[in-house]
Length: 194
Image 1 (cartoon, rainbow, N blue to C red):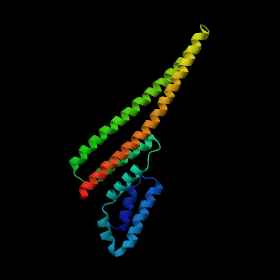
Image 2 (image 1 turned 90 degrees about the horizontal axis):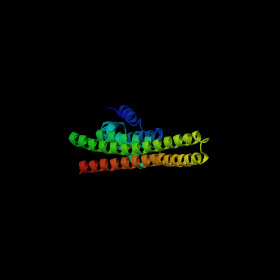
Image 3 (image 1 turned 90 degrees about the vertical axis):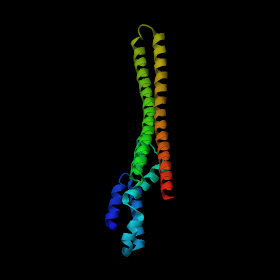
């Protein structure tokens, strides 16, 4: 592998990162090769490791250091870390066991977020149905209509609050989970290097 092939593969491995992050990383390694010089190209490549290993470290660093802005972004960061763990060079049985634990935690987090979201949806839908029912009985009893409208509005508000909580919980849990995975990967690397 030569310099150009190395940088091309590194860029391909980093395609999940934002453009600016990816270009900064590739520019850094281009400068690294420039400083080493053409005569030291193969030694530089051997010393750096594979582009997949470098990309795995950069992805984990990005995922851990940048808090997610949306739940989807948090989930993407969690998957980037999981993929980085598999790209890291350590024993396959340990990787499989660690991946099973991580996947289980991820499923639990997704389940909690899903249950809060379903509760929010059910409350919002119930509030709308109660408000419609209030309008349906307006001719029979104005007092009952007011009760239904007030109850429906309250339930609708609670549902909106649950929806907002779903968004906040999803964002925070995914960010915390990504940081946890980053710490695990750092500990695995520390043990391997010592």
